[in-house]
Image 1 (cartoon, rainbow, N blue to C red):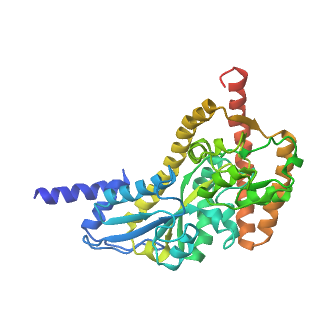
Image 2 (image 1 turned 120 degrees about the vertical axis):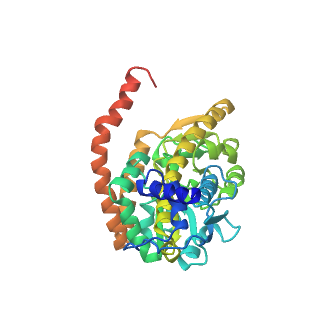
Image 3 (image 1 turned 180 degrees about the horizontal axis):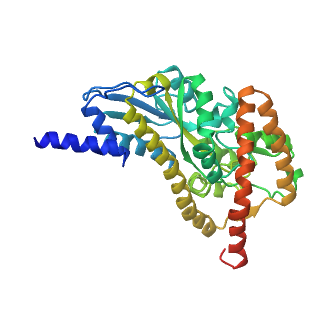
Length: 380
């Protein structure tokens, strides 16, 4: 009798939809009576167990990024009473860092965590769902994903690649990078060898720089030995731990090239459709937490490591206005060229631009004026 009461109580918890954590266990105790239309999974018996692999493009001990992956796996295991057993693998442990997209698309792995601009050569539109030079910041990007149709648009073109996608972490506005020499005018980019990926790299190349693509572990020795003259990475947390402050003198802001760098958790569509709908809902909510947790951690820890860089004696610089204007002009041209290269990219970028222009009107009215007010009263 007591056991029956417990089951009833848990079912009521599910119907109330108060917390997704309670929902997972219920559907595993009783089969769903009805299969919903769309991509929701079938009813399952209580003894069904899912043993999945979750690969990432980042190192197994990468701060925040890999922590976020491991937290996700732990929480799904807890919420489903062990029915969802997800094992995580860092870059190279199961598949190469940039092989995760194809591995999950083809179904040999169930899910991956990465940054979508890595797939630019396969799907040009993914650059706009990751980070756009001089584009929306994280607050605006989140509004686009969750309130402006951006997430649905992303899913629309990922479905053609056999993937279910969720935003899953964001770095916020990154730093502009480390330079061995000061950037005083746009001419200083002529011949500058810089490690910078994505659309930002195309912009640097357009103003005369030479773009060098390097994995994380190769950045410090390349900068130290002069193989490259400059590099961007992420922000104080990552940059300090990589030792970049010991290899270059000047640390620039803002990160015009990546004002909101979004990560993704993507799932093989067949694997996704095999899940009961309550576990699908938990995936949705757990990835939403990944998005919020990742940004919170970067903001909190970047502040801590900024103090370390200040104590070290790092020389902070801001890009001169004329340099930013030249970079912006080049970025606008590059963004349009990429969009023109592919009809899906054009559709996504036009959608992105329309929302960007709309949300910026409001943010210029309140967010920007608030920051200016803080400066005027001496609060910052």
